Image 1 (cartoon, helix red, strand yellow):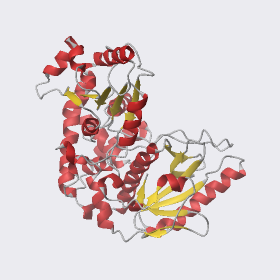
Image 2 (image 1 turned 45 degrees about the horizontal axis):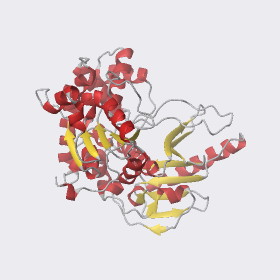
Image 3 (image 1 turned 90 degrees about the vertical axis):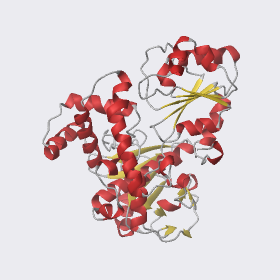
Image 4 (image 1 turned 120 degrees about the vertical axis):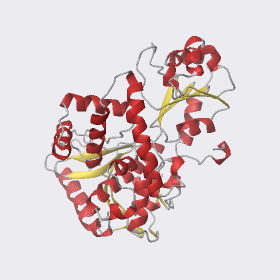
Length: 426
């Protein structure tokens, strides 16, 4: 890939901003999401620390023996997969302190390193950025006629957005947002992601911290997570699910340990619970909503490679569509310093996605694949808002249904917005 063909990412503006604020910027995220190319686009020199199949890299050894040589080069200098030589973190921090200059280094990493060899957090010297897979707007599958930022500020213009069919949406879910797979068919992309998962199980998890994990049990856990995508199931429920479906036992501590490892390689991207700022007597559950880094991972694990198979299982399609939408909402919200959560209380009331703005206001989103579900989704949002107000809590400032098959972006008479995901942008 020629850097001239780089497809711009929403995060690019944040990278440029952070290069003006910090001496070094660290870009983290799952493998294959485009970190290297994003870093390369903003740098003037680079060095790659990837280990070869044999587990050796001259650059990694050089970084450990003579880190000053690794840092030589025109700035900003990209150091790709820096976690292979963790001593570089302090070396870069010291160099930043010495020169006092901003925007000197861009580090990329596809796993959370151990603290070994790192003596300082880097606070004030480093800015951290999380890069996800591509949103529909970035991949060219959303027209971008509706701005999420403007919508969250109650600034909205109604418009026709065009027809979208179910097969098209199914293809988007199966393919996912991987930059390297944009030209692939859904089936080809699914096969590529299948190999991606195999390599993570066979290589990345073992190299993460030297722990030899049971590959079979990791695969069982991944499949269980795929079956429970976009839900708030507990670790115990995952254990029970594996027992029920695969007739195998996994210790609950093993489940927790493996989930922690999957988080460290950024394969998971769970939604945290929202409720701190509601300030009402309503008790809110504190379970995370489970997501992979991209819905295509769940599709591949469930052996869903073609659109027809997903269309024939609309319940699963709904959960995976929700995962795709929430991936996009997180990407868009991050661009204007907002945060995404989910809401679930002990009266079994749920809001699929919550976006909290910098000014403390929050917006509530229901996510529905079909237009026939818009009425019930809007009713749910209105009921929850009413209950929160009744409890003297802080109610959402905007209510919206994100839909798959709507052909228009509009405001209902009850004040609830309806927006197609294929028309949304930051």
